[in-house]
Image 1 (cartoon, rainbow, N blue to C red):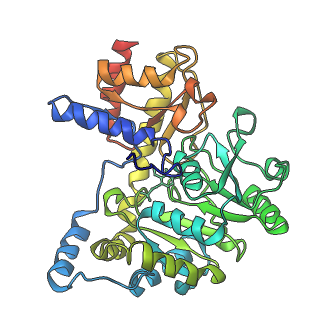
Image 2 (cartoon, helix red, strand yellow):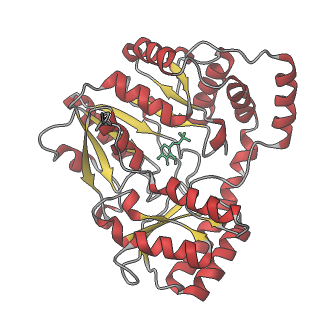
Image 3 (cartoon, protein in one colour):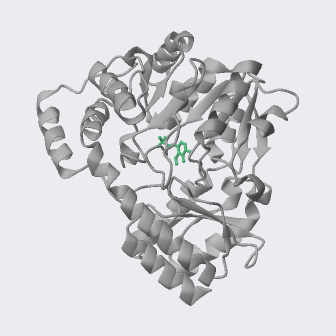
Length: 381
Ligand SMILES: Cc1ncc(COP(=O)(O)O)c(C=O)c1O
């Protein structure tokens, strides 16, 4: 008898992770790969924080914690909102999660019913549309392009018909790195509140902007769900720790979901999170490396015949139009990895229509790696 395979579980791959896997296979065979495919900072926790964490590891039992996460970390995050944004957040509204990815699962399950229409930008982070469809919601793409600097606007949101139940927005965005200016974010929030659209604001790239800082919607309205993470600014991808600032009415549902889905976020990571916040200044300086890499890559790509890319005001990606070279970015990225050992991500990950004309270059690795990647690509193209 053939047993069935559930349709809802059959979602497309996250191509950046598939390319990471292909790169890891090459490395296992002894090849050197320049990693421009994933948004994984080259740095880790500062040595002083690691030393302190060693002491915690020796004295704490590392048992389960309460599902919402340990109180000292929730208080430290509330203090961060106060110092960084001047916004007051009640630590009771903060839920620690297994990466921001875990936060999205809680947020979608707590806020939306099956069949609800949730807006996402296109291009946009692929897991939004894949998670939404696995969880029974309908992802509704809202196209952003060069005309609006790849930014979502309140006007574009208002034009969506039939109306949305929810909206997921990231600023800075992945893959484009674009930042929605504060007044426009306020206008988007106003449209959401007026129309009963539950906004999920992905703030994972906050702290990583090269001009004006990004606006947190935590200070704009009591209704949005703010999702954030220790993965990017704090360089803690593998610790799998994120957080949500939840509206009061969603706190208990999210707590019960967390208890039942994964019990509690990793305890050691929660202790590491407190230390990361304490050492915030060490991460602030990394922005200079990213800015240098961004300048280097922005200057090199036109020399390779790649002249158009989104204005990367934040995050650490260049989303580049490669249509002068290829109309099949998937095959192009595969060949690039195979023939040069430079791993990148095809635009199809972020946009299943126009994405075949785009490639995303991640520049959060070391400057030496970016230089090496450019050297190899110049010889190849
Ligand atoms: C926009 C965006 N949101 C969420 C995530 C998920 O990150 P994590 O689960 O490590 O917090 C990523 C990872 O690349 C991302 O780019």
